[in-house]
Length: 436
Ligand code: FES
Image (cartoon, rainbow, N blue to C red; front, side):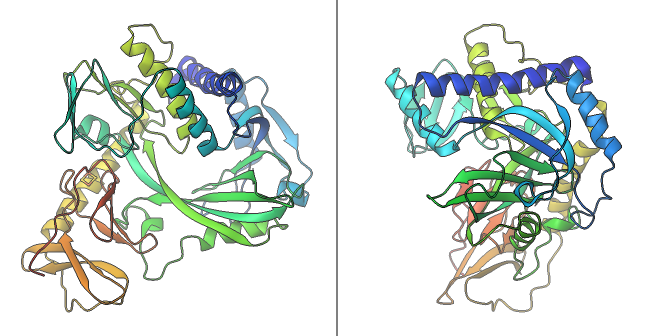
């Protein structure tokens, strides 16, 4: 999709980000369990995906491409199929991947920023950012030479960004395994949707086995993604847990479950640089994390800092949000457009609502007169009603029964059960319906 030279730059930037993190961890003495580990890409087994089992030849192609991109340490290996490697036999090994605890790292990094004179203000909502100023929700103005929207999805209305990336939910379970029962490494498979496995310290006797995947498009706009379909009572964690237990047979109790949102750019590369199209030379974005936010965020920081300071950066063109989309991405971009169109059609079509009676602690989108209503019935059966129109660009939100949120299928905004925005790009809450 991007050609050999560009792909080489991508590989270099990924390795450069890991090296940068390692250097900062050492210099700033950040306790975050940083270590270098091997990473394994292995073929999924029949039954682990709707895709046919990936043949060895596909992995061989991946190996050739990887070496061509400059990752000369990539090797074809056989792990022997034991329980400590999840039954994996032949696979690709990528050497020297960086592993660390992201929150411990961020805490250390934030302390280092402050130590070097930076100031961090949390819990302050930026309402408007343009030219040389950022306005906060309560009307205060911060003057600046440059502002960077480094959010999951930029909190703006720029369709040049929003039409080239799609929001996905990813599900994770944490299971206890005895120390040394699983080989310390990173693992991911070729399934569609794919699975990933990591290890983390838990207590003296156990490690936490983190297994995730089963990603689907945010907002349940079926049939665009059959995995996204909301079925009442659906347990999104059942599949990753079943997968984890079938592969990692030493797994014991499940102690954690969570999910998160990743933005997938149509051409699979992050968007780091000047906000495209908008003629504002001070406005930058960092987005499109593809589930690799720690690496991408680091590269974004390097690229955007250089751009602001007028320095040359070798990766600025590769990740420029204004780069022309490669020809191979037309389908993905059209699909994002189709989701928006379908959402607007759904908004316009009247919905048959026979009753507003609902189970306690559940939500739904219902019709009242001409209006679509996001309705939540709480534990005491009291109902809370909001306009179901997303305040970002007007798509129709959907109820997410796993998280008990209202999610927007268009660009990934989330609102809690009481309509409060908890993930952009929307900045405002869902509008309450007072006379419900
Ligand atoms: S997130 Fe863009 S319309 Fe809802």
